[in-house]
Image (cartoon, rainbow, N blue to C red; front, side, top):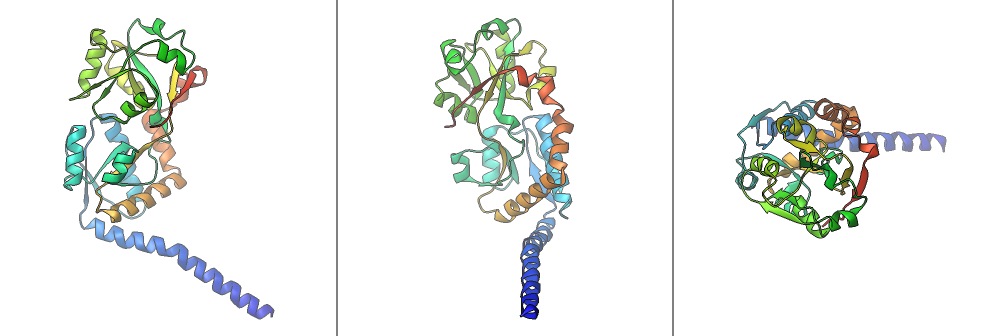
Length: 278
């Protein structure tokens, strides 16, 4: 009886090991196929974002045996990135998760910023902090009639709309928003940015200030999206990113590029305004 039980346990253990090894073997096979292409084409509208996402891609893939070149093809507009991804001129793009994108592309189902991107603080013109000092909750913010600004088609547009917050949507290059906000003459009062974005951006725009008291939060994250037909790349990236999180690489890169955000932005002392998702 004990001998049969022992044999059963050994067989179960071997089958378990084989089951665990199967995904790794498939990923290794997919990596070999992917290595024949050798290059992943990416685009970014931000140098800071490009550095983080490129290194995350490069190092997480290398750690599972896919040592690929990350090729930056230029600063493409939001609309052109979509077009290039559909036509396979772009290997992937990073975007906030949305139902529309999930229908158009394949989402690599591992979040990329630990939700830092959906913890939002505001860029405001210098000497306008007083407009925000009496705001304690979402109702106060709505009543303030302060108007936000976003690029055309951004996910935040839907978030602000669902939460009944006034906003203006601008087409074209995002960079013009900063100078328009500085002027105080374009009909909007603030520009919402992720807490992982605003610190580095503030160094480039000294005539703008970081609002000091509020923190807006909604539940989402940034994800890699790939072409609808590229399920192989999707599987490889999901495995590589999962391993990066388990190894500590993910957290290390978050800190390398964005540092101690809690302290830099005094997050614990801010009033949190939770926003509903569209």
